[in-house]
Image 1 (cartoon, rainbow, N blue to C red):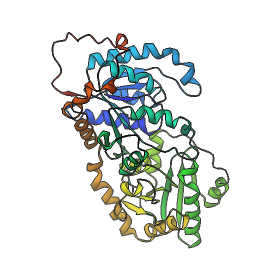
Image 2: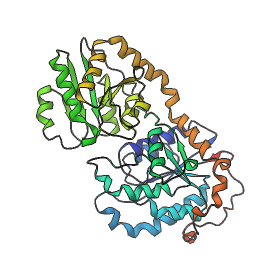
Image 3: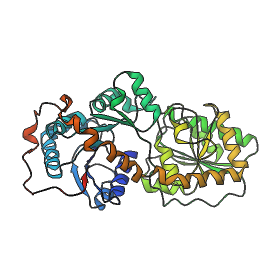
Image 4: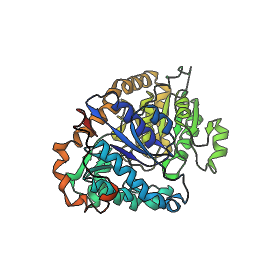
Length: 396
């Protein structure tokens, strides 16, 4: 069972794409529990899967003012688990309300695996205020999943989780098939920045790089897509003639933007791993990235993109110039992204989840003390289902 109570961003798409992949894998039956405020709820419901929708909150102080819903929501989740009988719960990202539901999984004696996306909070990100709360919930799971070796190393160095409870997966591509590769420009290069405008994302480094490349006489078209304060960058972007969509973007708007740019830039000052790379690869776009976090794991230098020598505007500029002046390199990298897509697919990712969440893999932990004392068993309706047998497919 997939569990995610967040509202917007990359994880609603992650949830949707995993459920869609599950529909193509007959050996595995996957249910889900999502928020009624999930921005892709209509798309998730259109998949006609077994999905429980919980009314959570829409933002702001709602996490506190809607706590009165908790008993009813726990009971609804318990009934869903009792009916569906999942072998394992996979929490795709910890949520501020996650600790409220941990006892439900414990009482139902269903192991929980949780994806840890970030171990250290990012500079300027308001969610950093809840980082410890979210990470603590994730680390109470029977198995902790990461999307990169970089994240695994960070967790091991923290000393808060042992290696035998850690599983390193990979970041699968997001489906951006409706973003066809644009017509090749006669000269120069089109480069896209995608994501919230926050200090750690390094938009200023990319702007500096484009200014440097322009000074060398190389034609570059820059696009900036994402919400957040631009500050002094606004006037610099205007002088560059950049396309700027400074707002929250739907997945359709992201795909439309990707369809008009040849390369995606990930100019981060620091990062764990990047969902922007997953969007870019899903659209068949090579990536220019800084050598930080797991970006060198995601982007193979000279194969699926270029990794800057340093985290500087000058190093990014050198990568931009290489792509702008070597059309063969750009084409080879774009082709490598497309050829490698099968190995980065949601179907492959789902198979790994099924393997790690199997009874043989996690079964011994069902009786582990970490599953709790069943204090909320009355909310779970844990009586046996009298339907007479289970579906022959493996339930997740």
